[in-house]
Image (tube, rainbow, N blue to C red; front, side, top):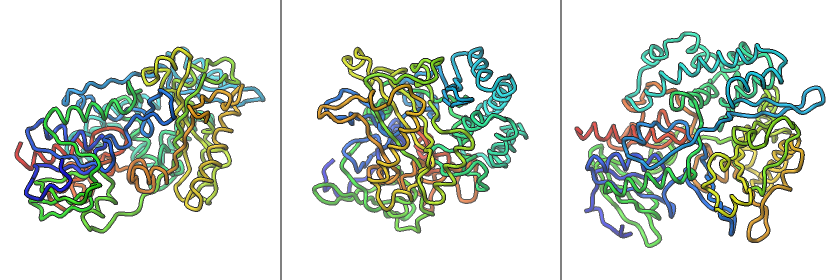
Length: 523
């Protein structure tokens, strides 16, 4: 699109930001016959759901930021005819621990018999496995009833409660801190910790936080697809956004990269969007504007009062290995342990201690994290030569590291945190991870780490928060609107992760914003 295109050119919808949610909205609206323009600040679409080659001269295309798929409804894939697939992981998780002076752990997956035996090996009995089955049977029932509502108009709280149709589950997930349910159902510290982790991904909270931020995080992590399964995107996360961009273009949408939106003005019926390129500024008209950015950015663009600042709390690390490291727990094959989620320093007491230390302004002494190997499930992200040589990827996601800890020295604290996080991993390995790291064309180890401040700088995530703000309950509250995407401007909608029912790689806010527009237009 010409950089100085004047305001006489108008579209039915201008979408601010070409992340996956913006592309979902663009594809739906363009396929409905509407004229659509997507304005993206960066030189490529995809936002946080991209695949890149981060290591010089190495043919490994990694999911650099977002990395697993659970919340993307099959409905969106079908509706848009996307050429996109996921693969399930046969192992759900492995959590190493030292008990009675010997290395052991908990492997969940590989069939019911193996999982039951793994629980017995760790705990010495059957009770924890039975509790595990009962608890996840409960969350599975909730998932089956709640997940389909994400692409429907927002239910009221009472309507969603009736859909759940399980008062015990409603109390455990929606009313009491999740720590109450975890402690009531499980006795083993390690098992408790594994359950709790789903409440803490990208969310800085304690198990008993009265705000229930941890409950909302937990809910979104266990309802995906109606099952709670987290799957591997074939070809990496960029395969999804590439497919979305192609579908939107094929339907007639215009995708303009290198176009940074700097202002939105609206009278509720028509809007003008001001953008900046390397060549200057331009203005384009729109009947509707969909903002695939954070609520803070929306407020800046519309000159409104910004919401409460968000804060991220995670460390994201990408690695390429020459081989998987051997484990101290010799009863577990590393290819199984790393194919699921490999939990590090995530016992229940460890998580509580790490949170308390970070809340006091210190890096956790034993930083909790979880790791998985994409290439074990989907080797297509590696070049044939790397596959033949046995190379593997590792993705690490660290918890309880709020952005405030990096304010005074982001680079220095990043290095300190990375070293202590890898030391926690090394404590369960039979060889140092450093011995397994590949090197790039310049001889440097193939490892990169991103703090919340790095994500704020690179992707404009407010405070580095991967959800743009605290996750919301998936039901209507005051001023949430019919679809959870509405703003105080009638024709300006929020279609990013900060919308109600946003967060994660889901496409749900993009779908819901498109449905809101089509309803307003009478389609």
